[in-house]
Structures are given as structure tokens and as C-alpha cells.
Image (cartoon, rainbow, N blue to C red; front, side, top):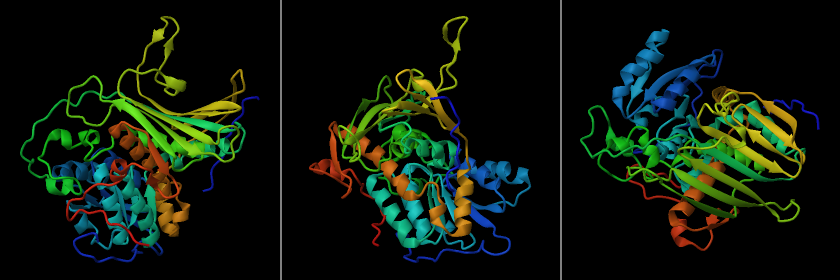
Length: 453
């Protein structure tokens, strides 16, 4: 098969008060401006601020963060220096949601706040974009899906690759049959992670509303390693690197393989090399089985996923940073390797965030390829203006399915055994201890509600 381009655009409360508002329509009309509030304004939060400000007739009206020390620099950098109106500032999301001028919220908090903030936002009539992973546990993802149906607002998952023509054409190609029976997918997340060391318990810094930061999580003393960023590596707040960068590649692997929830999950790994405060694994390997009634031979598909934290190889040639210096014969660059590999009966595919390539037949001749980046933020705004959740490239249900794979792998790893799962009933089979880990105990008043349809 001769190499050819295959680039084709895809078609395009639980709160203190039980008050539930109807969706706001203040943006509708001649000017059709959409007012957005960004909740959580550190790393990804700043990216969200910039991205919305770049869109036509979108106004970042408000910022919310429990660390008020961040406000002066963020306002100066993202508003004053751009000659934009200063945003309204909040440290408590509940107060922000009372503002009827806000049409949509964009949630970039730590993982343990994602679902509660999203559901509160839906109950307040706001459209919601929630960063990955959309849920901290399996139960939360189920409630997000039900809440989106119940409250009728636009709810976007943070799987931003789904807005890229690269990923859209990847899925179209894999499901077209041109690579034969696609029976195996691999997600790869090799990111260099230094030790976080150990930090003591200490008084809460001035300007930090720590009880609000803890929210649904258990009450614990303040420590730097359980706060900004390093919360990722603590089970109370994060989900390890599979639930951090990895969930992006998990979503792509699941999408390309054409599956939702598994029948079997097995994960092993560990926290290697470092004696520090991290309690999530820094190396984790998970394998999933899915039913495949239309396949030949074994009626199943397999998804492999691997996270590594340290020295790695350039698997699948996924990293453009790895360069072979022919004059010296050794690697002159050592960077992260992140992406996906797919295997079919007629060839295999290598995919990064911006391009995919195929290699066909026994001799692995170069085959079809594709690529292209899109705008996830624009997709959210377009769906709001059309009042049409069906326009979303990353609906919340797809986010839940991908997060579910993360959570099931983490349960398998933590218990040290294989998990059997019923994808129709969305239940773990014959393992009460594992079943209890599908949800958590919540701290009043920060309780994720069970949504009734």
C-alpha cells in the first residue's frame, strides 16, 4: 500500500442551600457573549484563562481559588496587562455559583473536587467544562453522567484530544477496517518525575482556605506535599500518573479500540527508587479485556497501559525529542514519551497528540497517516451558543468511561489482584472489598450527591 494522507475533519444541592437554578441565557441575543468563570487558577487554570480570552466574544468574568495569594499576580498578568476588565474574585465556589451573570464554569481544581464542583455547577444552571480526570472515583463518574442528563446543560470532559482532527481521523481510520481487525491497543505515559521528598505538617499559610481545599477529602493537617501539584501523588486527592497525564492516552486507546467498559482488569506496579511522601505508584502496568463479539478467534480485545517515572526508551518512536546522532551513535536527547500504539491484522499505528502513522503488512510499509490540532475550548463555547450538548467532541459520558479504566486499574493495583467486572451492570463481580473502593466516604457538607433520574 502506497503512503497517502488520510486527513479528514470529523463532523463536527448538595450545597448548603437546596436551591437549583435554571440554565442562564444572559449570553443569548445580539451580542451572544459567553461569560465564563475559571475555578482553580494555577497551572492548567492559567491555560484555561488564556484559551477563553482568545475566543471571540467570550469573557472571563470571574476567578475562583482557595489560595487567595494567587489573585494579584493572575489578575495583573491575564487582565491588567491585556487592558481587560478585572474579573470578580471568589475563594468559595458556592458564592460564585450564585452569580447569575456567569454562564459557564471551567473546573481546573485538584481531582477530588472535580465531580462535586461540576454537579454543583449543573444544579446552579451553569454549563460545565471539567478537567481530566472528570471524577476521583467510579461512583462520581456515574453521578456526573446522570447529572448531565438531568439538568440539561452542556457538560464537557477535559479529554481535549477529542477535539483534534488528529484523534478524530485516527478513530475513523481504525474503525473503517483498513487496518483489519484492531484487537490490541497500548497507552504509553513515560514522564520523568523527580522525588517529591518529605514535608512536615505545618500551620496553614495565610490566605489559604484549607478546609475548602480539602472539601470532600478527609480532614488532615496541612503539608506542602499534600497541597499544590504534589496532591497528584496522594490517594486522598489524586489518582497517580495514570489519572493525570495518562488518562488522556487511556481515552485515545479506548476510543481507537472501540470499547467502553471492560470485563477483566489486572494491574501491577510500585513506587520505586524513592523514599518520600508519594503513596501512588510511579510505575504501573495495567491490562484490560473487553468483549468483541465480531472478532475472529478469541472474542475479545485487549488494552495495555503503562506509566513510568524515570529512564525510558522511545517506544513506538512516539517522542520527537529522541534523536539519534549518527556521527556519535548515541541518543542525544532524553525526554518524555507519551502516546498510543494500535495493532490490527493488517498493520499497526503509532499516534502522538498531533499525528498518526501506520505501517502495513509483514514488511511494515508506510501506510495512511493523518494529523492536526483543534480547539477544545471553542467546541465548548459553540455547544453553549447552540444549546446543544450533542455538538461536544468530548461528552461527559466518554470521560467517565476512560476514567473508569483508571479507577479499576488503581483498585486492582492496591488490592494486588485481578478484578472481574460486569460492564452492563457497572459492578465488580464477587469482590466486596474491591466494590467498596468504587466510591469514598465524604466529609460534610462536601458530599457528592447520588443523582436520581
